[in-house]
Image (cartoon, rainbow, N blue to C red; front, top):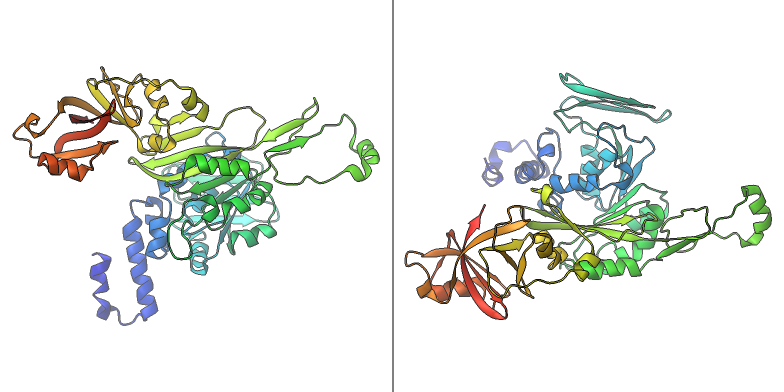
Length: 479
């Protein structure tokens, strides 16, 4: 029964108050709407769901698990125990999806949220016991013990003061503690310590409910908060809008914080140094990129931000920027990944794209390709063609062609059937088609109307500018 049908049966539940009835419907709708998006939560009987908007705006489980895989300090072999001193904070907790899966990499997690109702739901969910999972924490000895009972297949990990028993068939075992804080990010950071990871997903709507895309227009203001984030976090991860201008955002992150930290190294003991240092000893000012030492003198550390464009089923869901703190002179990397086909991840640098020669073919060949939405969002227009041996159809048309089929191309592929000049060139029996336009003077709807076609079927018509000339191609999609 759908939640809409259930809502019509209020008379059957007269024993519930109006407030209880609304909560009941909210739970039914939340579970119904997010069952595919959040399968782990759907298996937990006593899991609570927030209002519809929070369910719609939250990360999917796939995306949240991908974030967890990026945690720099916790990239350890599978089966290695969690460092009992590790900690993270989610400064914009929301529904808590990202907090939940990121926290699995840490012994201690702080969830921060301004909305009191979301805090109440998070407090319940982070402490819920499901499927006979029991977790206990001994604060005095830092012992952590998680046990799943009635398990037939399990493995044990024992190291230092950590012992966890996991069911290899279940990801619902929790051996981390999450503390919920009803606070704004700015207020929380005023008294916060240092974290291995700070995660921030700023609200991208203004006071009138309109969407915003610039970092400085989000809530909290990422640009203003950046120095504080870098001071408190060994690693900072920002989840940003899919509509974000990547180049503008990275330039803003790079320019609005102190880029270099100078570390002077003295070949002497601490006692001798302090005797001669006197008033010259000063605390570091500005943004903390990282305090690293070398036995050769002065070092400079530059904060770099790696970018991850994350898509699911060829739809860009989010853009992640992750700080990297190291002395390696490694350029910023941009990773384009569709979580349904992670093996086709495309990784590159801005320098590679800038320096890549552009290969253009004056006429379409046997096969035509369109890169994945993530690659197009990241702007790897020249490099994607070069890596797969393809030629572009036009400088500003992001379609590519080849004489032989490239089966592992990260995107859609078609076999070209013919070049279409007008309706007479099309088979008489063709009454419907999937119509796409790329750098073409007509919209898909206008082109369909001109060619007297309905939408649908298996045929494809692709309108594109090729060598400056508007051209229509009839093609067959290759699975």
